[in-house]
Length: 422
Image 1: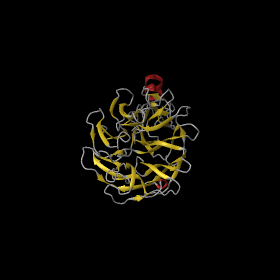
Image 2: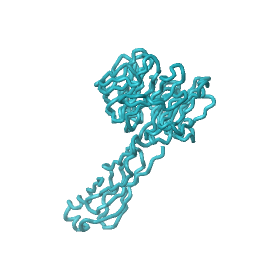
Image 3: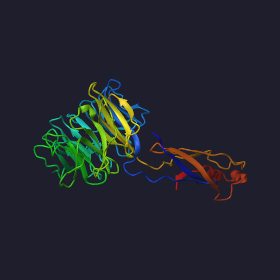
Image 4: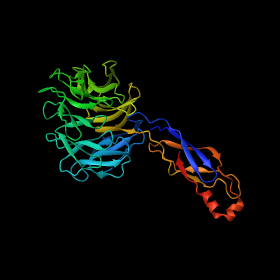
């Protein structure tokens, strides 16, 4: 991943104070810069979680365990990842650092669990508990505990403010779209399709209370289309006209990516399409002759889309990323399957509290100037940090050699240089 360089301009004082002044760009708009992509793969013969840069470099096995690990989900700040593992018995929810360290079990339950998803503020995690016919949607604190069951359901999507979730009930009945408050109250059926519809894959807009989903509500025996509906209820609005599933919003809320299968075609011809919310400018951004493109997911910066390609003949799955205009497709991994997630790297300020000068004396006893190197600044986003000497000033008379000899405290003051952001 290409990082930006951050420059910290440094003001050196000849006696007691070393101050840092850094000038940085404004924080990136939600959800952040493009980070790494986490995914599940059997590339080494076991089900593991990997992460990789969007250009395909620096592939890392984060779990490296004989257990089965999957369903990776990045925290909003990109520092942690929730996932599912059976390393201690049934498949339950764990969390680990972005580099795979400090794996910690969050739930202690005899039923299997899947699909953890963080709330936008990082304080809660929604997930599915139970098998196909017993599954229920749960919400817990991000550190574990304080679990709440919302309803029988699957595939949750958080509202932008983290107060509510949308989800579907596909598999229990014909499938409908529901919303509920994160505390389990306010349960409401949005799609109201009765005995048909097959509504699924709810996706909450990042900007407002509009929810996209797939449905056959107008043609129960025909192809699915993408609809949107207000989270407060109302009439659904059809946004596409073909056989379209798995909607995913662009970060700016202006476009939807989805998997499109031409009517009367075979299943291997699924392609990723993008359309503006007003229904204009629909375009295909993939073209695979031997596989179907599924599960489009926008990058945090909105300039790329990741997706899975399924090859029906061989049963294989590959993970790809492509520019949002259809240029530059890159195969990231083979033997990929299941869910994947894109890390949002927040534009955080450099950390300067540990900066030190070496040597710490600008004026040695012989009163000759010497070179001073600065080190210890770090950037939580991984950006390069350059410390630059901007100017040197003197806020009191230079200490003479005789003072060093007669006043040891003065020498001590000279050496006790410190750093802090201003």
